[in-house]
Length: 316
Image (cartoon, rainbow, N blue to C red):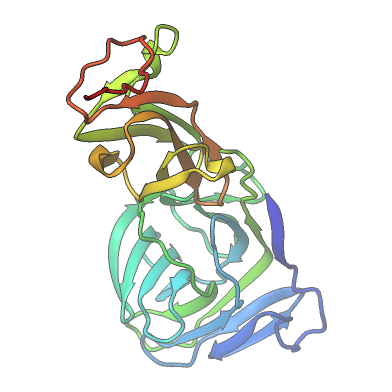
């Protein structure tokens, strides 16, 4: 993984949060080498600062400390569309000691995953991790001074439609009017550097007859492929001919099942070499083994394994 953002808030008391953080609401200053946020004295009021960075395919770590857990929450916004308010929000410290993953629609939190097994304690440092691995949003937390990072994730929500947006940190009062304060530290954002190519193979036509000959096909034939990746497969393309040597792209399929109905009446009779090319979410590609086929739409049957030679008919 490649680290793309770190913030430790080491600076003079009262100074602004360092770049790239931008204050959006409330008071965001540095106090005792921590990022302090104080909300206005009003119900549901918040102090918010955004980093101008996206979670992307990666992991965000941050340390949170709540001086009080009465009528306040500390939250991480991590799929936020910079204005409309839609996205996801991790609620990490509520007055009733919750740990929740919420879907946000115009700032109305709809809880989609929650865990209340571990109570939050005031004046205690908690380490928080938020992760997106290409298909799933996950979160976990642990006490910095007494616990080690757990292997498993506490909250997990599958979301194949995740889009990028600004990461934000916020402290927010709950229903009771109050000016609430929270402290953040040791922010680290890392992106996955995915260099692993997908794995792809043609499932139909089958390559099983390669030693004895080739598949004989005519009319419309369904080409199918299987593809897997350690993160996510973005597409599978089917080619007539070597993709690296001028092969003809037949079709690109964006989701499983990876299938394409090939009308062989549109191509010349004779030998064709078929390939499948898989592309993953990081643009890594892989090409399947070649599968040879004999296209024969002439109505003349050629035994499998036999060579199809041109036939000249002499007329008088």
